[in-house]
Each structure stands twice: as C-alpha cells, then as structure tokens.
Length: 161
Image (tube, rainbow, N blue to C red):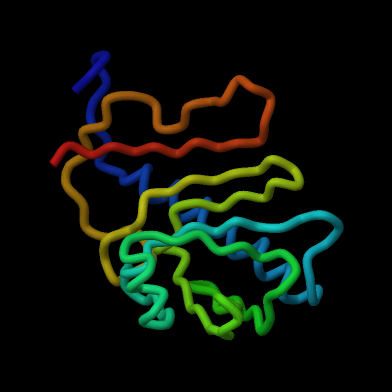
C-alpha cells in the first residue's frame, strides 16, 4: 500500500489500456471505411513482432525480432479492421507484404499531423482483453499528464513481479 490507499482488486491498468487500444481500432476503421487518410494525417504504428496473433512475413521477423514500426501514409492497400486486429498491405524493399496485427501487440500509435500519440505495454497472453492478474500493487497514479501542450497520453503501468 502507498499513501494509505488500499490496493485495487479491479485491473484498472488493463481496462484503460484495452480502451485506448480501441481508439486505434476506431481510427483505423474510419480510415478503412472512408477509403483513405484524411488531409495530412498519417500513422506510425509500433508493435511486437512475435506477440500472439501477429502474422508477418518471416523475413520481417528476422529483421525485426522484437518490435517494428510501420507507416500508413501514401502506399498501403487492403486495410481491413475488426474488433481484435487489423491487416494491411505494405511494401518492404519493393516486396509486397501482408501484415496482420492484433491491437494487443501494439506498443505505440502516433499521428504526427496533429501530434497525437498513445503508448502501450504489449499484452502477454493470447487474449486481447484483460486476463488473470496478480493482486494490484500500484505505486502511484496511472496516467501522467503531459505539460507541453501536446495531445500525448502517456500510459505507463508497472507491476511488481
């Protein structure tokens, strides 16, 4: 315990991360539905390449064994979005590739056109939602406000192991 507050039995950190990942899905769904990115918007999406459910070509896993960042801007195709994942066609060294990325594998989402950014912890299990967890041992507030005037939401949850 810290500051005299009891430990939470509700996994707020996991619930908040799941909700913020839904923001990514909603944005990508809107882009897929509208047939392209509006205005100057473009996205940098960082994800764990070996997380459960990620399906990318072996050569990309070998080149990026832990994490990679993709850019959705001018040259992408077949963007498909559902409640659990998205898939997209991209070219790497002029070789077309299809990538399937569950939202649970995403560690970062950035739209530089409006300086909007989300950061996540990669979920470790095969499920995309909150799963079993240890008793909460949070030491402080979950979300730290950014004072620089940007639209960055910093989500940094640390669990004692």
